[in-house]
Each structure stands twice: as C-alpha cells, then as structure tokens.
Length: 160
Image 1 (cartoon, rainbow, N blue to C red):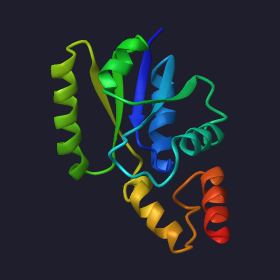
Image 2: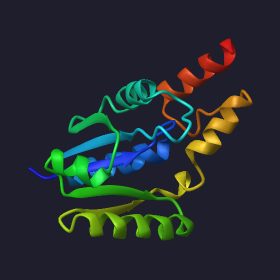
Image 3: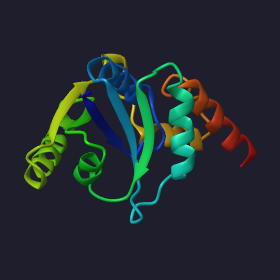
Image 4: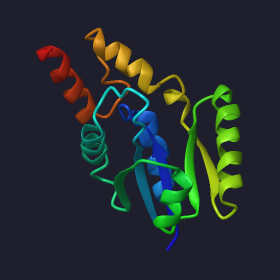
C-alpha cells in the first residue's frame, strides 16, 4: 500500500488544496492530510477547526485520513510508514520555496520523496491568506473555498 502525506497549514483549506488532494488520492492508495501545528505562528483557525473543515470538505474522498502534527514532516512520515510528501504548486513563484523545502526534507531523510502537483489554472490565485482577508472584510469566499468552509467563515464573521 502506497501512502502519501499532504502536509500544510490549511488555514483555511481552499479549493486549490482540494484540487491537489483529489489528484493525489487518485495516484496513491492512501493520502494523509496533515495539519502542521506551529506554536510560533499565529493561526487564523484552531487545529481542531482545520481538521473538522478538511474532513467535512473531503467526505467524498474515501482514501484519505486527516491528522495533525507538531514537528518535522519527515519524522511524521516515517512514523506513518509513508515515503512520499505531496506539495501543491500554484505558480512559478511557489517553486523556489517548495524546491528548497524538498531538498531539506531529502537531506533529513533520503527515503522521503516529494511529488509536486500543480493546481488547475482556475485555482492559481487562491491562497489561504487571501481567503482570510476577504472573509475578515465580510466578502464572499464561496468561489475560493469548499462550501463547509464558506459557511463556517460566514457564520464566524456574521457573529463577530
């Protein structure tokens, strides 16, 4: 069984993330979506909210699991007996950072390989940061995020 890890902050999960996830799920037997927990970085959503929203957004994908971790991605991958990391690319500007990250991970563990999946063109401009900004200004984010996320953000900012 070939298992891949799809790590990220998913703060919040976007349609671009789901595009990459759906294609990864077609390639690998199992994909573990892993929410990175970074105590030094202020998150928009809690880890629990991120996990719940990813699960709700991916109900139709049967070969995924959603988890969280605090630490090095390669160590998490080893624990889960996965040797592939999935990384999504939106634009050429993402590639330099992702390439460096891939090389660091490869240096930490030669058994870990990175697979880059490019989002569909209609998702190239979507970032979690942009979604957060539009949501905070009470704009419509439904074009950028799955419906459970759009509903959650609308409720969050209507009450606030």
